Amino acid sequence: MPRYTAIVTLLAIALYFFFATRVAVAHGKFGVKLPATTGNLDFERVFRAHENTLEWMPTFLVPLWLCAIYLSDIAAAALGLLWIVGRVVYFVGYSKAVEKRLPGFFIQSTACMLLFVGAAAGIVMVMRSAGS
Amino acid sequence: MPRYTAIVTLLAIALYFFFATRVAVAHGKFGVKLPATTGNLDFERVFRAHENTLEWMPTFLVPLWLCAIYLSDIAAAALGLLWIVGRVVYFVGYSKAVEKRLPGFFIQSTACMLLFVGAAAGIVMVMRSAGS
Amino acid sequence: MPRYTAIVTLLAIALYFFFATRVAVAHGKFGVKLPATTGNLDFERVFRAHENTLEWMPTFLVPLWLCAIYLSDIAAAALGLLWIVGRVVYFVGYSKAVEKRLPGFFIQSTACMLLFVGAAAGIVMVMRSAGS
Image 1 (cartoon, chains in turn green, orange, blue):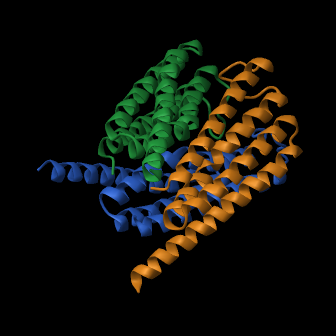
Image 2 (cartoon, each protein chain N blue to C red; image 1 turned 180 degrees about the vertical axis):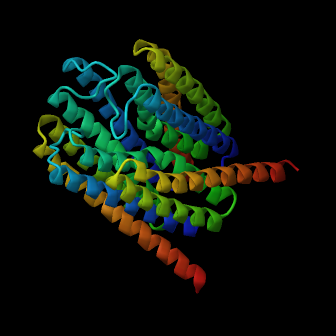
Image 3 (tube, rainbow over the protein chains, first blue to last red; image 1 turned 90 degrees about the vertical axis):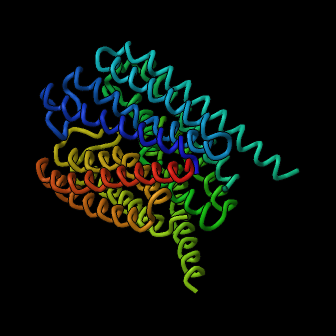
């Protein structure tokens, strides 16, 4: 099984968990009482930054592991680290202002796109070598 | 590793990513400014159609892969394609009207149910043959 | 492949699906018409209890399977059962009152933390034995 990708995946989950704790802090700081998740724009940006990270989890984790299994553990792990960097930049930026989410967003979406291409290439190569 | 299921999973992720781009377009089209995700019913239906697809990802991806690993790659991939068809019908329908989400919803939930049964059957068979 | 963890994962998905049916019932019971997901606090608590379970899925499923693959199938499955218990307590509690979500929340987060530690320990041990 891919080891480097496993470590990077745990790092990504740790970061994602850390984002969740920031949402909990923001609930208190901006006075948004559960079960509400709206009512204050500063809170909503933190909430949406976490929620968007969740929304991208399938788009990140699935290509990450298919790339690791069918193409290369090291390549998948390296792109996984890039995703983590992009998500940190995104979260810090979005917490400050809506427009500041964009640089990190493009870093993380580029990582996902490359992982997707890598996964697709890996599967095609495995199928070809099995067919020949 | 299951190859056909890997391809179908990538297709499902590509579709899910496409839905996300529709939400981004709807933000602009219906004038719902981030971080808000409410305020216009036409926007909210598109947003909820994407969000519901996310909500079903665990219910889809987990049985899909357990079915592929423990029972049959081909069967899992075929039901995965059915799920994709159901999700397209669901998204197109929900974008138009709340009631129009139902036919697609039942197609995709039927696919998930069959994948779940297939996964459970596969695990039971593997355990039985290991025990005998 | 890990069999006990596979069974526990299917149980977790079945529970998660059951929570989704409770949200559908709550839509009708408390008169919150789709695509809206706010407007009634009793509904919102049920909705958020389901949504929080989704939010924790990556934090649960990833360490669960990494722990099962790199450390121990039985240990991962046992902690997976603990997570399920915690989620039941959480959902029943949160449906009644905001504060009553906490005991179940701590049970499930403890399970996730132990799975994370188990996964990390397992990966480190595999890398060490490969390096020696």
